[in-house]
Length: 418
Length: 163
Ligand SMILES: Cc1cc2nc3c(=O)[nH]c(=O)nc-3n(C[C@H](O)[C@H](O)[C@H](O)COP(=O)(O)O)c2cc1C
Ligand code: SF4
Ligand code: FES
Image (cartoon, rainbow over all chains, first blue to last red):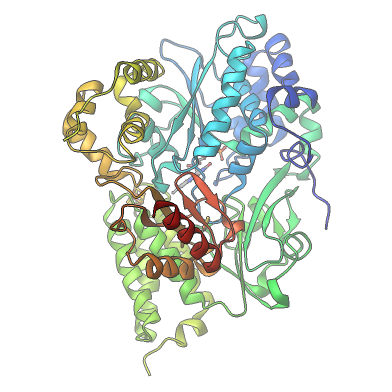
């Protein structure tokens, strides 16, 4: 198998690694935290993360250091860091691996983040279905309290921090950061209008930053090895490595860690072993259900934020879904819109109604009752959701649905009424 | 009807939970999970009001939350609650067929429970294990790369144990 570039999966790939505090410490765990608490000012940590070029691994790829820098200086209100471990984007399963396989790595990154942003109490929001991950992370937190790495006066530094694991209850939209904050406040998970941004008014109307699990897992490396070592990985504007989730019709689906900018075709053929049963490739959805589909002849591209954006799609949550020649792309479109229709929070009319109508139209194709006009209507209805909604969910439905009909019209034509 | 209200031990746990949030209502999601844990996996009548009082919010607030999230149930699940993922990509890698097989085998549709109370079925969206498709979750455990034969064997075993 092609070799991985291991950073966040470094310990997980060691077959004997237990993932508890002792095991993590043996790999150099919590030396970054020690260094930060003993020798760095919060602003210096923010600067280091900024200089590393680390971009958020949850979806949008926003600069992590810049986001941390938006947090105001300490004032009368508490500051919060919320770790987004909701992982519900179809095709995505890397955060689960990180939480279960090496819970201390992202937690160390989170504690460092909390220190950098002056937080005294923060939350890890894990999707409610993942009881195993919830228990595993809770066990890691309990170990930290017992060993004075959480609670009062951590490592004798005078810094106090509490971390609380918060379970979700089954709602994809709570992965959207402002919906997550409402959910954390014991409400329905409805995305909020921005501004105000969470750094001004987030959890409990206090300054808040939301970060993905993998984003935080990179932080100990940046502190230990230095920003240059991190920035040397990947490409200039897309630094570091990434844990890519590859699923679908493959010989070896799974999570593979490679540098940013690694070729997408190589990920599919060299890492995931190519298409199952020696079949031909038909299509790739490269960044979760929210990303526009690529045709088989469009995948010889670097896999990173900017390259995927330039290719008219997005890296999103690093969920590469691969479909073979026997796949009916109308079925892929139907599964996708059914998901979005089920998960729309219902606040915005274009999203609530649009997902419903598009679902019905796609089903007409599956009943072999489609025609050219219906294809146009799917395209138009999808276009009407884009840019007209409170949160990015609207664009995440509209773009992919347009891409299915535009890139695979022949697949829809097979379902025309005869 | 069973009594509504936590035991002293659970109330202690709930008070610790409240202590981890700036306001009691923030703990509503984990609190509702505790109610379900204490009540065979669902929210029997009367608990909405009880929980609302504990959190110092209106019953309507609690009801709004319960109906928003998938995991809160207004009817008891089976002893074995089965969730089958039929999302993308699982749905295109055998998930739909697995769900159909279970529907036939248990003679129930998603959302229902078998008459003997043993099995309930739910169609799930992505469960973050897509590389293991087709998969199902039984209570808290994931069953990876499941086949119809394995399902039949397992259902047979559960029913034999019961008989
Ligand atoms: C509909 C929707 C769902 C999302 N789901 C997730 C998710 O499950 N996990 C995640 O980390 N980010 C998710 N995001 C992105 C978050 O809103 C947020 O940008 C991210 O957690 C920020 O962390 P990062 O900067 O470290 O990537 C979602 C965004 C949208 C619009
Ligand atoms: S775009 Fe959809 S999911 Fe987002 S707020 Fe509007 S209705 Fe809710
Ligand atoms: S699509 Fe089934 S687990 Fe992700």
